[in-house]
Length: 333
View 1 (cartoon, one colour):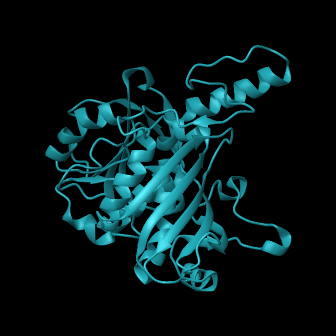
View 2 (view 1 turned 90 degrees about the vertical axis):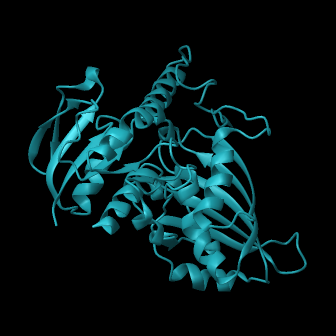
View 3 (view 1 turned 30 degrees about the vertical axis):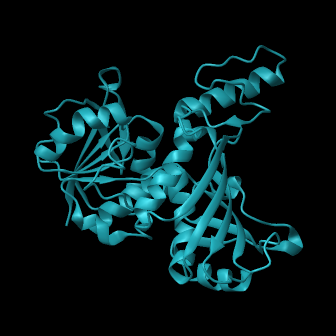
């Protein structure tokens, strides 16, 4: 069944990726509406052989729309998503605006697809780092409950949008030319550097990104007892986030058992060749939807066999944002 689709934030990095993913997954679109701020209105965008004119987002934009993908920032979602729902659309929101709101499903289709049809017009797409972690950890959690997760992230600049990519590119050119390194988006130089994720530090000492990974994973897994601690770091990589994950299970777990489970898991591809020292890399995760998983090994700091270490890479613009949302929409239909 073909449906009328709107994309809010159509000119942004994720908005553009929505168009790529919708085309590649052959999502059944009857009519397509591209929405953005007033300054982007009038811009022409090609999709599936047709040219579309970007329109200014207003609360009256959603008449006849059945599915609305939002990716224009939390403030925009809070202001305009209720109007889309009132007009009869199902909103799949890619911001943090509604993720932890009671009654709003927070969905990774490989993990909790049963939540999709419990919506009241709103479905939240989780944080990109949360999705990339949850896809490989969930099948392990189902087989042998994870008691504790320790995760350190290596997050690409495009996680901050197209402006993040531009800033890295400009700094690379300036560095190569011996020029002055200019900062606009990030609080510190990103070229030849890394720093704690550029989000606000909360009273608990964790930044917003770290708290999102903790709270969202508990909600998605339906397990408020799950112990999680995260350290999120921005690195000078254009695209695809990587994560080092340490897992503590309720019962002993071997690397071979992990490999067997992940080999059958949807959305996962094992890249784990110790002889060639070949493991997940963001350059290979970029542009695809699978989360690459490797460095599968026993945690040698434990004597009880209940610890496993993993290293993963996933495209945060695709599976961490656009693809996850489109997969939700596919299941809606």
